[in-house]
Length: 287
Image (cartoon, rainbow, N blue to C red):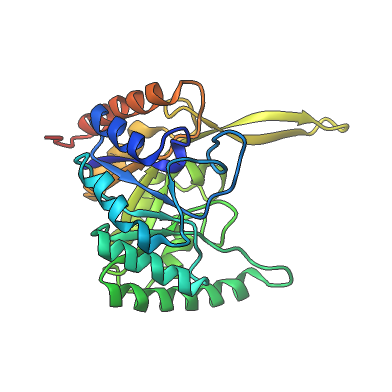
C-alpha cells in the first residue's frame, strides 16, 4: 500500500511546494488536480487552488508535471481530472496525458440525470459513455476511473458495479471514496469492497459528519454534511483499512482532506502518521 495526496486539498501550495513538502513528510505520491483555474481572491479548495495544472494546454505542461513529481521522488497514483466521459475530446486528452506520464489511470467526474430524464434513462446513456471510454482507455493503455460520488448516477458500490459490469477491468475501474459515500451511497465497506471485486482500482479517503443546520417551524431537524478531520467523521477508518486488507487491496490510497481544523502542513503530516498506523494495524507491511 502506498499513500498520496490529491492536490485539490492543498490549495495554498504551488506544485513545486506541494511536491517538496509532501515528499519531505514521507508521502509516496501526488495526485495532481487538472482543470482550468477559477480565479479567487484567496486560494480555496475549488477556486484559486494553486496546486493545479490547467486542462487547456495540458500537453505543454507534461514535462513540468513529470519533473516536479519525479524530481521529488514521488509517484503518480492517478491524474485527478474534472472531465466527464461525455466530454470526449478532453477525456481522451487526459488519458493520453496519463499514458505519457506513466500515471496509469485518470479520475473522471460523474453525471446525474438531466431534467426530464428518469434515472434508468440516464443510466443507460451513461453506460454508453463508459463503453466509449473503455475503448479510448484501451487505445492509450491506461485505465479510466469511475468515482463513487454523491449527487451522481453512481454514489454507491452497487450502482458502480452495475454500470461497469462486463467492461474490461484493465481499462475501467472504480475509485472507492468512503467520505463521499457518507453523504450518499453508504454501504457496509466490507460488502462494498467485496462487491467491486476486480473493478476496485483506487481508493480516496476523507471524512464527513452531519451537523444540525436548522430547526424548521414544525420541529423537523435539518442536518447537513460537513468535511471533518479523518478521525472525526461517520466513516470509521480503522474498520475500513481492515476491510481493504481483507479484500487483498494493496494499491494507492489518496487523501483529500477538506477539513481546516489544522494548518495545511500539520494536516498532511498528521494524516500520513494516522493512515500508516491504520494500515499497519490492519496487517499491511509498509516497508
